[in-house]
Length: 188
Image (cartoon, rainbow, N blue to C red; front, side, top):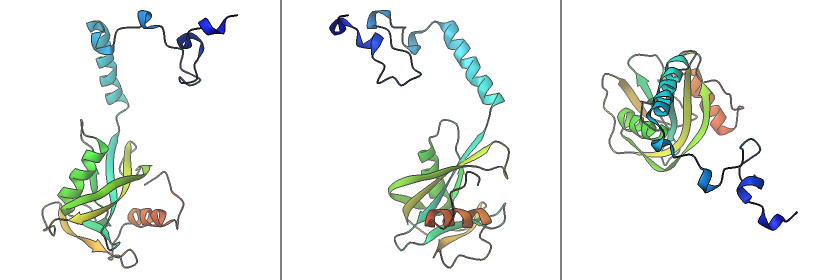
């Protein structure tokens, strides 16, 4: 057998992984998705809508936002009790990072210094059977104190060892996980 004439696309799947079939030669390739027949595009769209309706889930972001002194930023909302880390829902067409940046600005006039680190993703069954939270750790700076408004009635930076009364159990669990004092859970 002359292995020098064997086509890589037919015989070498080392870059494809075990479950991905070899790719056809360029002459046999299917047209790119944007060039597919309108019926195929319609079926794809219908399936995406069906999955959105039948498997819908909500997705949110929260951050352990620390200042340069190592204090964590917490907010108290007008519509739920307790002190929480800032965050909110991810809207359609919005990336997780865009949602995080938006929520930090809206809830605390906060700007991320450096890069926000995704710490974990949690299932938040207390909110609903389909809610998930992407939890980030980041360093922030505040452009101006956040005045109280209809959503955020109080906010501020707090030393982790001197949190205000009423910090939620979930907030305490996340801080313990970040500190390495508790195992990382998969539930908020």
